Amino acid sequence: MKLEEYNISVDEHSDGVFRFILKNIKDEDKARDIVQDSFEKLWRNVDNINFLKVKSYLYTTAYRTMIDLIRREKRKEDFNQVDVSAYSHSQQYTDLKEILDQALERLSDIQRSVVLLRDYEGYNYQEIADITELSESQVKVYIYRARKKMKEYIGHMESVI
Image 1: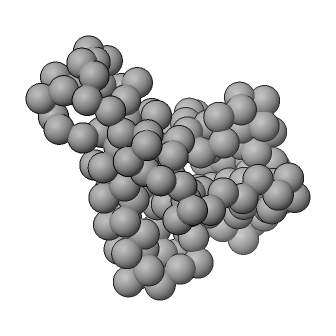
Image 2: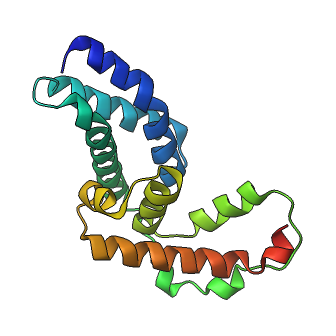
C-alpha cells in the first residue's frame, strides 16, 4: 500500500470504525484511542497490507483492540442471569433510535458486536466470523439470540411507533 492509499483509507474508514467501536463501548475517548491504535497498526504494516482488504483489516484490528480493552477492564456481563422481562416495557415512545440503543446496551459484548457488524455496517456472516474469530455458525447463533433479546426488550411495535 502506498501513502496515498493509506490516506484514502483514513478518509473512507475512520468514521465507520469509530461508530462501530463507540456503539460497543459507549466511551468516546476510548473509542478514539482504539481507532487511533488501529490506524497506527495499519501504518506499521502498510507494506504488508493489500489496499483492497484494508477495511476488513481495520475493523478486525479495532475489534480485537476493543476486546483486549474490555478484558483488561473486566467489564463482563452475564446476560443470562438478568431477567429480561423486568426491563421490557409497554410505554409509548417516539424515538426509535433511543429504544434500539437501549436494547443494544442490554446485549453482551459479543452479541452487540456481531449485530452492529451485521445490521449497522453491512458485513456478511463470513466477514464477521473473520473479524471476530468465530465460526460462521457461531456468528449466526449470536445474531439470532441478540435479535431475540432485543425483540423481547422492545416488546410490541405498536408501543414503539
